[in-house]
Amino acid sequence: MTGVRCMLMRGGTSKGAYFLADDLPSDPQARDDLLLRIMGTPDPQQIDGLGGAQPVTSKVAVVSPAGGPDRDVDYLFLQIGVDEATVSDRQNCGNLLAGIGQFAVERGLVPAGPERTTVRIRMVNTDSIAISTFATPGGEVDYSGTTAISGVPGTAAPVELDFTGTEGSVCGSLLPTGNVRDEIDGIAVTCVDNGMPVVVARAADLGVTGYEPVGDLKADTALAARIDALRIQAGKLMGLGDVSGTSVPKTTLVAAPRDGGAICTRTFIPVRPHPSIGVLGGVSVVTALLLDGAVGHDLLVTPPDGAPVDIEHPSGKLAIGIEFDTTSPSPRVSRSTVIRTARKLFDGTVFPRP
Image 1 (cartoon, rainbow, N blue to C red):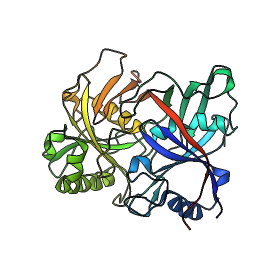
Image 2: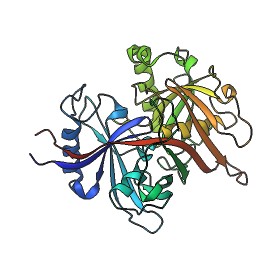
Image 3: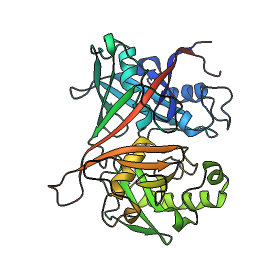
Image 4: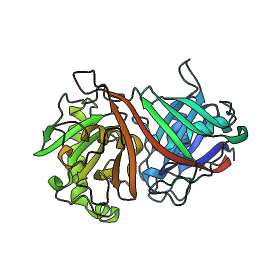
């Protein structure tokens, strides 16, 4: 069997296979076929591949040298289906992003600094830039540290992620429908895109509290059907066309915080409950909640000026900072920030299913 060079990494609260573009077929169809066989899709258990039987562990990062002067590397994210043979490039992944800079250093695409390294990453899916800064004492990546993030056991080295130009990067505008608030099937929603298209709705409006464990939400087939119908209609309003076979837009249900955070969330990809919340999904949700008149704005416990917004999710909390351009007459985002961690799990050769 012919193997493929691969690094398995945990990035944030996700896990994925990282590849150099040169190690994969250049033809997208051949590449996708190979990745499906590597991840063990289609199979609900992905028993014959690297996938972990859920969307957050069935992900791929494809990294290549910079294709322009404004970045150091290009990063293509591919969401691999679990029980369906799908490969989607219609979204970013801010969690796997947390390991891209380190992977680029490990593969020799970017030289390491003596103490810290900053890597400018073009997120190919949305043609936007993220800046990742992480520890490289002695010129080598150090994954150890004392930073804890919810949803991940133990601690690791912090990764600072700064986003610019993510506003409207998928749909073309921050509020793709042109409205802060819309109504779909009698449900009030806010459709937003600050790096990830998301439909925000009150949990109570869909007949749940917003505090349910993931297992309970997963078993609620009626809720899944309502969420799917909601997001399919929202996708058309957001200019995404027919989204019935894609993982975007995400749907996030919000409720008042109850664990010291600013808001409580339950997110679905596309109808499967997320064990936590995605980085860019969280960025979009916080952006929406900070807008007057948005769904959930009245539930938000607004932090002091300049302080990050703590999102409560099933695994804990995620802190996100959003800076708005106060000189603009309409809502414009100037910068988003988040702290994540990442860890190399193995580096070697993966053998795809024949």
